[in-house]
Length: 199
Image 1 (cartoon, helix red, strand yellow):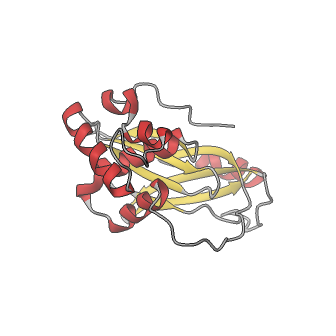
Image 2 (cartoon, rainbow, N blue to C red; image 1 turned 90 degrees about the vertical axis):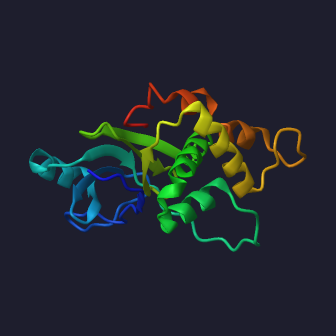
């Protein structure tokens, strides 16, 4: 299966009965993979009990629907890790694969993304599935299994793209500096991913 990166939006209603989800309602999400890539479907508890036995899904998880907050008008500001990740995923440039992964790790450390599942294909390629805690969107991120030599180069690239100064600079937030550095798990390859369901 070819690696790809993508964001899959959470539905506002059940894919089976079409009833709209209520805030904090338990729901089930399923990703299938076909010729057009990943397809996400979201179900209420009742419909999930009916469709789950016959559903052939690549990945499934349980979560709670969160009513999206109203859009807020904000002044222009510097690129954030989230806005940069979204932009790079839209660009679909394979050369930014390492950067996308580091940004996803940063957002996971900031508790903005939660890892829902990890899959390894027949070629040994690893794909990580993250869910945005507020919007419910699914981020499909290939794991490049960064080695130390590539990690340092990627760290510098990420910090430059975020406008973060190197260590000793005045504008280096400690949490972003640590996250941009990737931590031990980014350097060595994550051996113990978070559980698939985070209540």
